[in-house]
Image (cartoon, rainbow, N blue to C red; front, side):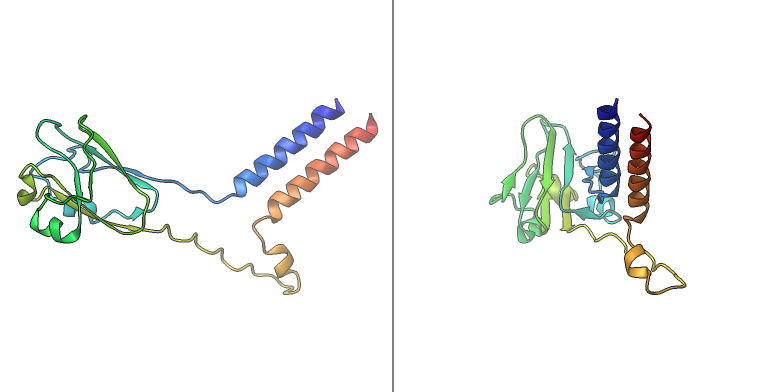
Length: 173
């Protein structure tokens, strides 16, 4: 019985620690939204309200018989030149995923002639911004602010209370 309570305390403390860890999440963008990677779509407009961060993914969905996904440099992006690609992301299935795992500018075109009609995408990948800082704690006693102005105060109070409860219950047994 005592071992089960100790295990419960450890599990509870682990949950408290996990809840305090900062969130990190990657986003998978389907290029072109519901339309996908196809002609007659302005991908500059599609991308303008999005923020691409290191760790995100681009998901290209297209007709594999008519399109492809070619990564090029900026000069070849502007001129729609696919002769010297940096990377050919085309896998043949028409469902290609590009990891954005380096902070830099990415340039994608299709080599099938549709690039001249606007079938190209430029993406600027940035590092995730730091989380916003918490508002300063207004305290009547400035001496207590450094000790209690932390994000760990509430979880620590719960952890101490839980351990106290376990100790009190163990003494009764």
